[in-house]
Amino acid sequence: MERPELKIRIRDLSVQYADGTESLHEISLDIYANQINVLFGPAGGGKSTLLRTLNRLNDLADVKKQNGDVLLDGEDILSPDYDVIQLRRRLGIVFARPVPLPMTIYDNVIYGLRLAGIKDKAQLDATVERALRQAILWDEVADRLGDSGYDLSGGQQQRLCLARSLALRPEVIMLDEPTSGLDPISTFKVEQTLRELKSEYTIIMVPHSVQQAARIADWAAFFLQGELIEWNTGSRIFTNPQNSRTEDYITGRFG
Amino acid sequence: MKLPRQVSQRIAFGFITLAAVVVVLPILYIIGYVVVQGAGAVTWTFLLEMPRDGMKAGGLLPAILGTLLLTVGTALIAVPIGVGGAIYLSEYAKENAGTQAIRVAIINLAGIPSVVYGLFGLGLFVIFLNFGTSILAGSLTLGIMTLPVIISTAEEALRAVPQSFRLVSTSLGGTRWQTVQRVVLPQALPGVITGIILGIERAAGETAPILFTAVAFFLPQLPSSVFDQTMALPYHLYVISTQVPGMPIRIQYGTALVLLLFILSMNLLATLIRRHYRKQRVW
Image: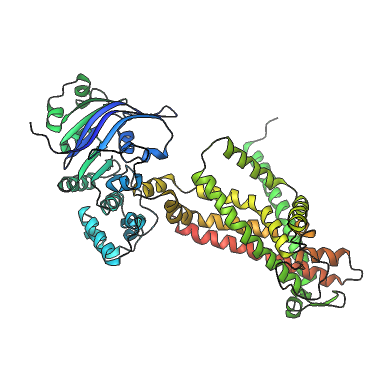
């Protein structure tokens, strides 16, 4: 079978936090460009840890031990002198609970650009419209960009957070259970958005359910207690899992 | 013997009410007494003129101005260092033995009697650094005394800002400093400002720290530089209450009233700022 273009290569990655919580054990996984790469499994499996390792947000946490390699377009991003600020602009992340910053919708979207020192009003305006359109939020907020991000509903806030990431034109968008707090209609909108976005971006997503994983995955990796159990195309893993634990989880025998 | 629940409830409630009254009454009494005794003395002349006739007539201008200058000087020294220290402790410092030592030092600094600060200021600023008895030496002494209050309230306000804001800002390519500057500090500002005002207001009413470092019994003219001595309200009140025979009661209480108003208005300002911002808070 023909494989899509490789974006991130993860080899023998282990991460352990100082307090002994959720960690990763010798993970080897490829992330493909312009695909929806799903990381799924029960809570505490290491999915969020992996996301936070990929854009080095783990630098903020108390990590006891980290080894292995993560190559983004062939560059070693875990190297201590890698430019993490640049890295985080290339790998955007959206968290489970939407966190608008305490400012207007407009200022939320361009927050990342302002940090990068971009001041040109026309460019900022254009970015706001593009990012909000890509996140399918523009029509709902176009006439009230000056309102607080907190005036939006939960589903709108989550799309605002997505737009805020998209504003930086990242190469990879990582979403950590982006629909866990949303109603089915908002969830459908977010999933729809992701399917449209994959032509331009590489998407890594932690779904909030097996059903969502099966709906949306081009590639899927099953994580259990810090280990990568199985990894394959979505259609294979959800119809013909090779490992019995994967099968048990997918069929609902545990989880 | 067991009392019926209703009765024990009433008794407990009675005690609490009594405690509240015991706290509030003396404050109201003191303020009321000072107002009644001193209000007659407070006129424009009293506020805006130099003292005359051995301070038994005329006004408080040099003392009011002196306290204002010392307050501003205290703020200039304590605010940048205090807020900077709080930002360091809350946003940058790793939790280790060194940081713990700093925290313990701050707590201890807050407990040192103000007269000890006065002696410290005398030794370091007045004599060793040769600033003389001056507004500068007094401001530095008051500033150092105010630091622990500002650092601990500001740090608390910074820590209250949700961690998720920092995570989001970092994930969008923000440096630690950008995150502090654009999100954390603005959100913590009401708490920080409240702490600053409460700290400085305490400094404004202090006598002991400026006793050896800044004030004079009486000065015929206003200070013209930070190296000059000054008069100040709290010390002036002490002087006219104990050191000048035949001082009219009216003037003593008038001076106390002016000092009270100065400090109460700062308190009020702090309350208003806190209220104003709390309404806008989203977290």
